[in-house]
Length: 415
Image 1: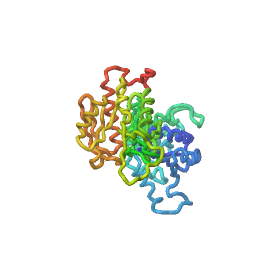
Image 2 (image 1 turned 90 degrees about the vertical axis):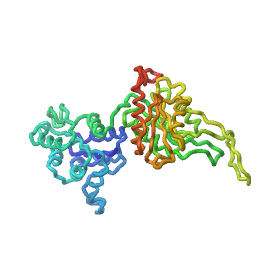
Image 3 (image 1 turned 120 degrees about the horizontal axis):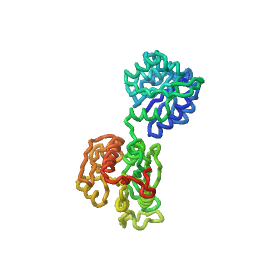
Image 4 (image 1 turned 135 degrees about the vertical axis):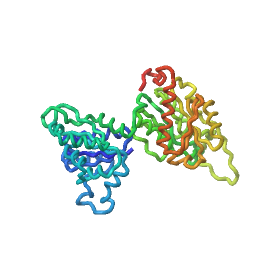
């Protein structure tokens, strides 16, 4: 999710830095846009340090910037790629310009150029807030679909008391999440997610592995964080950066992943095994590089630990979700795995299907449940598929009869 945060010139501008952090905790990318007045209260450098991104302060990049097409239409580019615009704090002046269609800086021009939802969080003197002109402008913005987070009452920076204080960071964040469709239905869950491949060494140079990119597992971790879960991501080697907000555990071999899952699952409420775990490893890895000798080479392999089966055997009321990446007889193999592993759900896909194989940004999945259910989903982005999988996990949780079903066995208290 991409959000543009417009910061206008008021004492409450410093709270926008807290809002950036809060939105980042939801896995939201934040592009900060500052008015000239806002820069009198807090520097662009603060937001650049928090976001790691350029902070937009000028309509055309500033006097020192080279004029080019990119700078001239940057407001259009930002308007097209954001999922939401939030203005916090929104001063009386900025609100008036937005209501009247005045676009004399980047923020107000962005407001006119975007079709994304808009959240406005006013902050100003109580008399300014209560003035009929301001109330009329607020009503105008509401009539156009903007969601207004009303200011709080209390002691104001000007020394007066009354309505006008910027709403709490949490209230603004909730408004943003609500408009983006981000909820916290996993707020009481601790979910372990595995991702990526595992590697089994043949010698110091070579190893056995598979083509897993880790994208599905990382998307699941990101989606679960966005929905309020505490997420522990156990990952084999990938090129991906861990999503913000997860607790990250890096492993390489199946044995290492097995130990990490067993350890982390002790205090979890659910496990999603999206990793493509190696089923076999060399019986005797060589300490030195295996040299070519002109004849064939025979490798003796042994089974690796069956992580899914080991965990599901003693899962109690915890939910276990497995994956089945298949090339033939997908439904048959998925149903067989569901039964043999004693998992609650199996997510199956045909890796030979277009848009469903390894290293794609999309997936085509079918989720099989122990109750006989079978949910087919069309090709969609992996982050969307992740949310559909989490929906099914919640359905399993809701079907459990006893209240402690999703409690942590160690403490008896949901996390």
